[in-house]
Length: 313
Image (cartoon, rainbow, N blue to C red; front, side, top):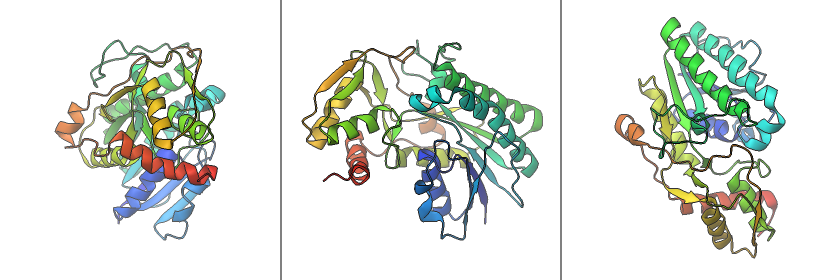
């Protein structure tokens, strides 16, 4: 039986990844300090003999006894509301946390997969964004704590590959949504759905013409799993290339929830990207992957989760 370590495994994406790896017949060791993760996301796994949870901050030395085959480094605050409130912790987990996780991969001779982000492209001057684009990031802006932490993590990952021969993978994750997102995490979908279900005004920052591309979580996890088992060392975009404006997205949520909510416009935060759309031609070619779920289908599935969370009919 293969053993996988998932840092940040109690988070939104990390918990779905734990599920997938266990379903693939692996033993999973989930490490999380619960700073933004939620024990409820993994509570259904506690009775499973092939699942172990360790509460630990991965910016400190990581000790895992026995053989480890895969290390998937997903530990990090990931939403703007989190990394703006936790700027130092975000920088530390991207730098020190990545260093400790890579050290474990080197010690165990394990495959290491880094969860990077489309935010490495910053407010892009190239559209759509391909892996060859180097980005347009403001290192001293408020979002720089997340963007630069991930850019550094990619550099460190490649250094461990080149210098120590560690088998590494880098996934650049674009906007993803689905069950287990935190209601108050500040990202568009949970904010819009919770506001719509309560018939509250839907908060749009800027004029709403900025674009995003939303990928349903099951599609993303499939792409990550295929990348893990591949031999691709360089970054791979995983996301849904179907682009939509934030205003259109809000209107779609209102329609699907049957809400009476109206749109309410607020000033755009500093360095908020104007466009975001992945070029997934590399993933299609080397992983034979592309998203299967439509945005509408994904939203309807996510809606059921939020209704239960908010206890609305």
